[in-house]
Image (cartoon, rainbow, N blue to C red):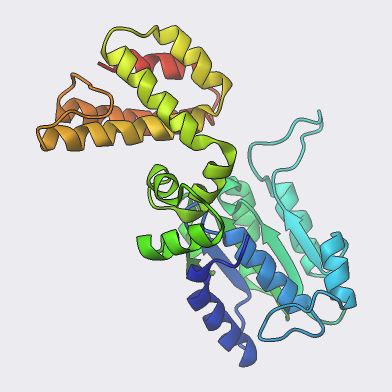
Length: 311
């Protein structure tokens, strides 16, 4: 994937600070998934470690670059979901992980340059872990950089957010998004961008993964349920077996399109009998259901409750 053009302004600002020797000790990379936050982060880290960087970009050939690409750079550490003692992956980042990270950053750099730590997703830290991170943020060591990545930065405590320089990734213009997608070789760029609600990164990913087919399947399922032709439990089983979160995204999108069609006195894509108020309520319920799938509730019951309300 080529460099995303909507990164350019953020990149130029950071490189200007680097040239002045005024790089922040903590950065929060925030914004919707799909806009390349992690690609931007990797490019930044590689450039900071590189011994022959040009305009902030790594040469890719020096010892630091080779070690980083191999995942063995001694001055880089990345923190994400760890494993519990029983070998099951945790659903949050816990305090012991952050304490270990802080102890690592207190050590001297082995290459005599930057020490860089990444917490991704930072919004997965529990309260104790976030509190443990505060001391590191308040008393940074020289040439130490902490990079936090968050798709949902509002889940981070204000005490954490206020101690980081924030880089906010916003959706680019439709024209810029389409130009980039077409440059990436997408034949269905317009449809993919519509499916992703204007998010070019998600559009690129979903087009490659067959998500546009799933989008049409969701609309057909909702149309069948609205017309009394579908079996709710069958739809629940199929959705649950194949990208249920994404299908709920498309279901909410279909409800929004239905509501717009009602406002224009036309027939929507799913021919729902619900009025605009009911469609708005269903749209919100679909988004809540998508969040609920990440929790302890049974997915089949979450979907059944939602789809039973569709008319």
